[in-house]
Image 1 (cartoon, chains in turn brown, red):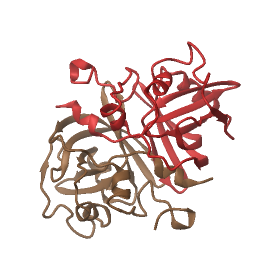
Image 2 (tube, rainbow over the protein chains, first blue to last red; image 1 turned 120 degrees about the horizontal axis):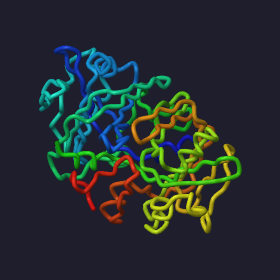
Image 3 (cartoon, helix red, strand yellow; image 1 turned 45 degrees about the vertical axis):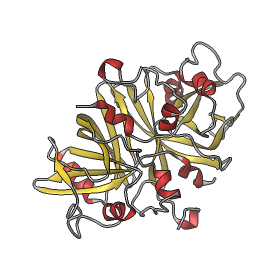
Image 4 (tube, rainbow over the protein chains, first blue to last red; image 1 turned 180 degrees about the vertical axis):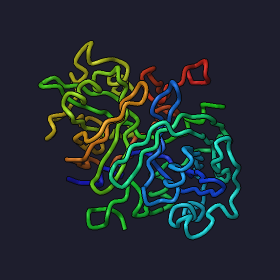
Length: 174
Length: 174
C-alpha cells in the first residue's frame, strides 16, 4: 500500500469561516466540494480539534472563500498553522460578515459561498459538515489555487490536523 | 446569489468502480476526497440513479482510479455519459480486479485506491460513501487531471446526474 496515491487527489484551497455569537474564526481547508445541485449543497471536512469546528457546531453556518493561485504563502500560513484560540486570525485581513453571520475573507478570494448546515457526520478525527448554500458570489476571474499548486509550486506544507496529512514515517512529505 | 461560484471549487477526475457479485461497473466522478489521515479514509459522492451507487451499496467497496491530464475526452465520455445498464462500459478498457473485487481502471491512471465503506450518508440526489482505504498504489508520475482543466482546456461538459451540474437557466454552461 502506497499512501502517496492520496496526494494525487485534487482539491482547491479555501478559507472556511464561522462564528459563535460575536466571536469569529476562519481556517484553511482543502476539502470543500459540491454534493448535490438541486438544492445546491456543499460539504466541508474540518478537524474536531479546530476552533472553526466548534464554531460551525455552535452557529450551524459556514462560509468558504475560494483562494486565487497568487495567494501569498504567509497569508495561507496565517490561517493554517495557528489556532484562533491563540489570537485573532482575522486581524489585518479584509473580510465581510455574510448573511449567515460568518466571516467571508475577501483578500485573495475569487469567489465565496455561505451555507447552513443540514447534516453533519463524524468520521474519526474529522466532521463532515453538509450545508445548503444560501449565498454565493463570484469576485474575480483570477485562476483559482489548487492544492497541488500549493504543494508543488509554493512548496507549502500540511499541518498535522489536515485530512490529507501523511506522517513522514508513512511516506508523507516533511 | 451567483451559483457560478461553485464552478470555482477544485476537484480531480476519477473513474470510480464497484461490483455486485460478478457484475462490474465504473463511472466518472470528480468528488473523491480524503477525510481523515489516521486511519486513512476517503469519501466519494455518487448519484443515487447511477448503477455504481447500486453496486457500492451491494458490495460495500469501491475503487478510484486517478486520471492523468492527458486522458482523451472520448475515454471520459465513455464512463460519464452512458450507463452501465445499457452496456459494458469496461469493454476495451484496461483494468484489473482489486483486492476488494472492484474493477480498477488502469488506462490513463496515475494512481488508484480501494476502500471498504464504513459509513454512508444520503444527501438529496446523492450518496456520500465514506471508505477506509485498504489498498493504494502510485502508477505514474504524470500530471493529474483537474476538473477545471477538463472544463477549460478539454471543453468537457457535465452530465445532469453530477453533483456539480448547474442547469443552463441557473447560469450553468451548456
